[in-house]
Length: 114
Length: 116
Image 1 (cartoon, one colour):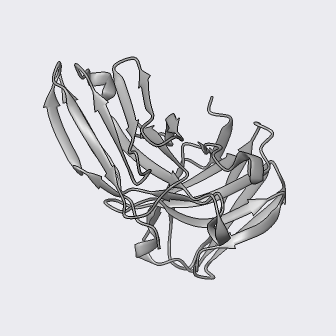
Image 2: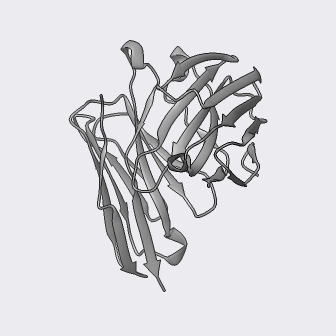
């Protein structure tokens, strides 16, 4: 069974601070997706990283896929209250009987105070 | 508008009731999913349908019964649930196939279920 460990589970910071969320596994994934879920809504895709070592930027959010494709990180610069939400990482398997199956981490609840 | 619509948004039911959750997608996807989201636990995949054929059942108790009449509609029939089944039930859709294994999931806003 593939597992994704996210850390930290909870993060409470002030507006303007920087933060990093980590997503780690002992398994290799063909790709890693990051989602954000706001209260009362379903998760929404932020980004997909596919290549080992890949870095993608989405405004103040920077996503990195580890060289070995076993881990990923999300860095937010100058956090704003609108960044508040649950951040989920999800890895995709590309082979065998688990083809295309997503494995989710348990999520990081981020609260950004004004 | 997420493209995936779930109804109802909230549901309170007793342990002897029978109810159904509905999901509809207008994105042209060929796969639909039911997930259970509980506090402090990863999203749990329950069922997967690909071109309306069930391709995955993750050891879900029989008190949950899915139905997929076509690629755009998905139901979850509930009966004799337990209080521990209280959770947010999320429906999702995506493209699924050899050339689209990285396709993201598009989620609905979920049904908040409370079993009393």
